Length: 463
Image (spheres, rainbow, N blue to C red):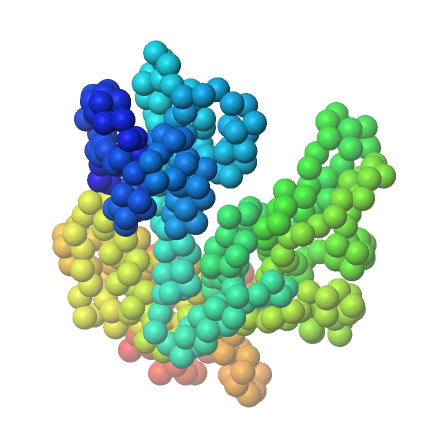
């Protein structure tokens, strides 16, 4: 930040020099004297932070100059200095935007010094707030939150932009780990509500008997244990955004209460009679297909349409062509920076990263990358450092039409892999005899090849 600029508008040149000398004792100040209103107005392009104005200048009075300054540069603070103590004039000038009105006497220089210290303090605080706001805005730009170049992510960015420019209710759907809360934050922090609170609540994490109090609050004595008044999340959101994550987990009774609140946009705390108007925006998220939940009778149809608004469906990582490599490099770069290490992927590591289906989506990829960075003892991460947490049978397993024999083999091979190829352990988990597994291995050695199967110390090999 440059120097703190102070202009002095004073036709008494001796007094102007004395005030300039006094203020210049602070080395952070750049103090310049002018002797008419016109000179001050001509110099406004230099963007001073403070102007001290003598009320009786030769070409215009302090009130007129104040109006002109505020018209062209309303951010500049103006201190009026007058030889007369006139309360009505002072009040009028303060009403027009003057920072303060100081009467000329032996204490004038000290008073002006102290007032400028306050102005500078507020100026620095404002600059800090603006800097933080800029950092937050950059942090929550959708392209900085949802990393990727795929067509699916590009479409999501476009919808976020539309959602940010309005106050429409937004419903976000997508598998676990696809970034639903990140999308909600991107919408909030890029909207006109960005200075208001963003309140997130995971419906699935709160017991059903506590969810109403958590959302709507309660009065003291409303129920056993209610020793103090509690402000609910909706009330805390004020004119900001409330993000209801995993809305599909809400029970039917609470769905009815939420519907009433959303219809009226007002609530009463539990045990209270006062109606509290709501001004917050609603964003919801779920990993479930809510439309199917409506058809199954698990979710109210009227609430579903009340919450639908602008729907955003997040693609799975597997469907985001080209994004796995892009995200892998991004996560590795962040991790290395945070931990002051150097790592890079081998071509084999990137190939292995791109070969996996990622049922845990972006969250799982990030975890895999961080683990790989730890496992690597030197700069290079190779394919042996890429470790995947085996999941249940892939969902594509059910998309193919197979007979019972094929399904049986698939299930047994999956459990053998899961049990480190120990036939006894796999047989116990499947509640079948080990002879059934050996029969399948013997009947179809090609399907089960490249594995070594063990029963304690007995290790039959499949050639």
